[in-house]
Image 1: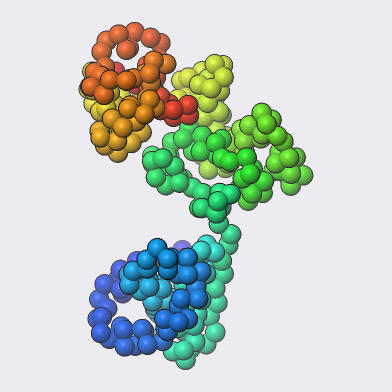
Image 2: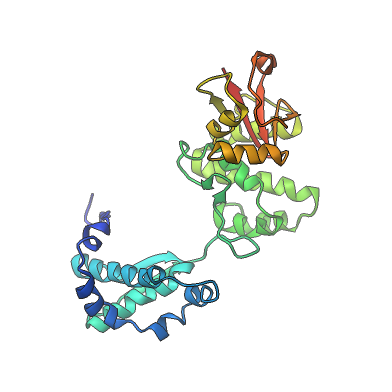
Length: 292
């Protein structure tokens, strides 16, 4: 709403109706393979094998910018710095078509010390939607970041004073874990609110330090409380299939109520629920409370 209200569009509305020959003649002719191969995203892939689809992606994203420029007067494309080559491709395309100036703006991505994007978990993407990534799982992701990422995460994703961020990043050994707890709480509070952040913190404290309440631990009500252990693992979204669950069991990664599961055919029974909380665990950091 308003004079400068945002417009949300779907590029399928214009890409799906494109005619291949016409597109390649009018748009493809504005790009040269030699220039495209200077892009870092392509240079890094040459040794592994670069598909035509990947090469064509730059053309499609560049065309998106041109289309939005023509239809809505859009003159600025923003994205992560891994999109720099594609954004510049659009800027160059608009210039070659004979239009006025257009611009690109990129921002730094959160990456691990190996340069890989942060934001991936064992279950896939780290979502802001609590239905897709629970506040507890969200908290745990940031609680378990690499030591080397404390400064980057603290400076980019929290409103802590920079002096405090520097202090936290300078901590070593066991103390760095306290820094990660602070960051995890601050980021979870920003996304999910202080109440959910405190619940996540309390659940983590109960699980890993034996203090506090486990009531805020992620809970799963199984479709059948007496199902196979592999079915329980899948329903907890620990992995995507029973075959993957069997692999985890074979690797010694699964335990139930602190007892390691070694039998891939194990069936849950009443005795598994004769404790205050039935806890299914993968490794040391993934916990779920099973409910009948």
